[in-house]
Length: 174
Image 1: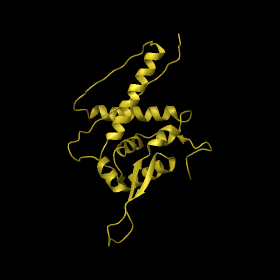
Image 2 (image 1 turned 30 degrees about the vertical axis):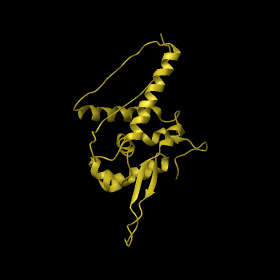
Image 3 (image 1 turned 90 degrees about the horizontal axis):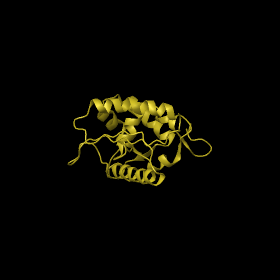
Image 4 (image 1 turned 120 degrees about the vertical axis):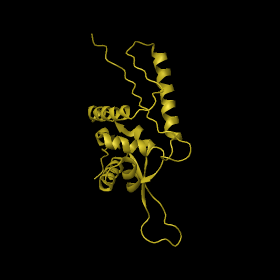
């Protein structure tokens, strides 16, 4: 059963689980098998496999089968990787509150693991529309750079980081 609706949109509710958010984040930089995801996140293989299948069915992950080595026997390893086009297909009207709750839960986990805080910012301000659009563009560039340059865990001179960006336009409620 596919989670996509008739418009081809991917429902946000498929991410409404802190573990699934972690899996999608992990697979941003590399393709991994259920075994590798389970080892990295410290969860059971069956749990990793289940959540990977659910995320793939929802359109967040692509399945990539690794070819066996020449002369190799058996089935190819089933690998999954993040599908960056899923962000453009999100159904933002469905499940937004559930995803925000899952993000908040996962953010609390990340904050507890923080070794060094590089930057933090919070503001509820009024900005000129042109300034706001410039800020949104800069954050979009930073997010794209983080996704494009992400790599596999524990390889080379890499540092494990967390980056959360939520830009909100608020209602003028008085």
